[in-house]
Length: 196
Image (cartoon, rainbow, N blue to C red):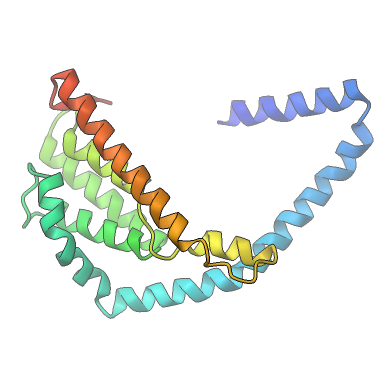
């Protein structure tokens, strides 16, 4: 990534020199940096508020209840993971935390789930469960898209959460396409594991 970003910066500078826009580039860099800091400050209040709500949801046991609620569905998606195992529990809690928008809580749970799945797999190839978990974690559904709503509010939206239906529809679609694609590839490849 550093090489890609470095190349983009170099190409931007080169283009500014060739097109005679070097003065605009010089003034645009500090303006963009100032704008980025202002944006961060403007959305931090809303992010803190929703993070607090999500922390309360975690502390009052809502995540554990959601994890138990999703267990029947997850048993079908992870047939080779025992429901009483630590891996299954971490997967359930990760999905529940992502659903509630608790990204900070979801990350360590996701890492723990992948560590347990790796221990169960005991191989140098990624199992179907590991691939399924990566897909589900990447295309996670969020009931409350806090960051997007905060950005919309900072840019003057009067109703920053009026995109909820669209967010839910697109995230459900993305998750369904990801899961179906991984299953199709597994079936057509004739393998039960993926090379890393």
